[in-house]
Image 1 (cartoon, rainbow, N blue to C red):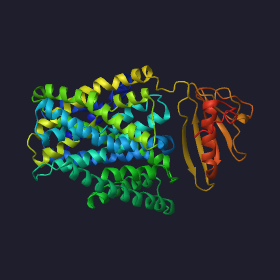
Image 2: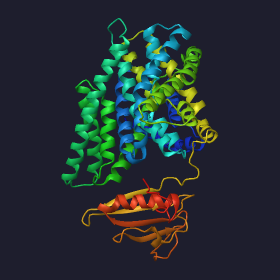
Image 3: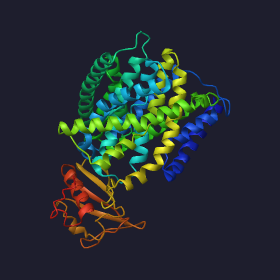
Image 4: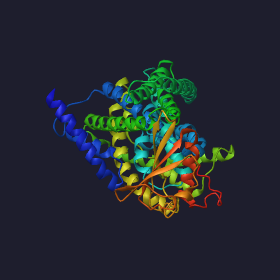
Length: 498
C-alpha cells in the first residue's frame, strides 16, 4: 500500500509540474498525462492494466467530475449569446459529423458499418477539458469563445448516446431512426432531471446553514452526481443532466461560491490526471503501429470533411432559424478548433467492455487520432485565431472578480485585478462612479497595500477591493467591466459591461 501511495503521489506531482510545460507550449496537458500513463505501463515500468470495463466505469466518473467543474465555472452571461448555435453544433452537428465520418471511414478503410459508425460516433464530440485548457488562454471574441465553450460541454451526451446504442449486443446494427429516437428520449430526460436537481439544490443550499464552509463545495459536487445518477437511472443522459445542473448551481448566488468553484477546479484537475494516466496505461504501444495508417486516414476525414461539414450545416440551420450567425473567418475557426481529448478514448471502452468485435482496434485508432491531431491542432490555434482575425486584441481581457460573502452585513467583497490593456489604467477612484454605498478600502500596488483617496489613480497590475451590498454586486461588476473596456466615459459610449 505504501509503495502504491508513493507512486500515485509522485505521478500527481509530476502531472502538476507538467502543466507549466503545457502552458508554455500551448499543448493540452492531456498529452503529457497520457505519456505518463504509457511510461508507467507495460512498455515502461511494466504495470499491467487491460480491464476495459473498469476503465469505462472510472472514466465515466472522471468525466462527470470534469463536466461538473465545467458547468460550475461557466459564466452564463458570457456564453449566453453563443448558446443557441452551440446547442445546434452539439446536437445536429454531432449527428452530421457522426454520419459523414462513419460513411467516409466505411468507404476509405473498408470497415463494416457498425465499426465505421462507431469510429464516427466516438470522435464526434469535442472535449471540454482540451477546449478549456487551450481556448481560455486565447483572447477570442466573446461570442466565438462562448460558442466553443458551450459546445464542448453540451456535445458529450449525444456522442455517448450514439456509442452506447451502437455497442448493444443485439443485431442488426441500430438504424439511424432508432438512434435518433433513443437520443431524443435520453436528452429530454437528462434536461428534465437537470432542471429539477439544479433549482432544488440552489434553494436547499441557500436555506440550510451548514456548520462548516468546507461542506458547501462537497454538497454541490454531490448534487452534480445526483443529477448524473438520477438521469441515468431513468434511462436519460447523465452527462447532460450534470452539465446543465452545474451551470444552474454555478451561476446562482450560493454561500461560499468562490470556495466551491475552487474545490471543483481542484477535483477536476485530479480527475483529469487520473483519467489520462489510466488511459495511457490501457494503451499497448506494441499494437499502436498497426493502427497508424487507418488512424491517420480517419483523422484527416474528420478534420477535413466531417467537422467542416457539420459546422457549415449547423451554421446554416442557425441562420435560417435566426438563432445565430457567424462570419466566414469565425466559421473556419470553429471548424479547426474542434479539439478531441479524453472523451473519445473513454467512449471506446464502452464497445470494448461490451465485447463488440474489433473494439480494441477501435481504441488504438482513436488513441492515435487524439494524440496526433491534438499535437497538430492545439499549438496552431493561436496562429489560426490571429490569421483569421477572430481575436479581440483591442479589448482588455476579462476583469477577474472574486467574492467572499460577508454574511452578517449581507455584503460582498470584490477583488479586482487590472490586466494589461485595461482602460482602468489612469482612472481615479471617484471616476469609477460606483454606487454611494460602495467602498474601495484597499489597493495593492507592487506588493504594497495602501488606503486610496478618491483622487488616487489606478494602474495596470493593481489589485483593489470593493465592499458592496450583495444587492448591488451585479451593478458594480457591470460598471467595472464597462470601465475596463472603454474607460471612465464608458456610459457615454453606450458600454454597459454585459
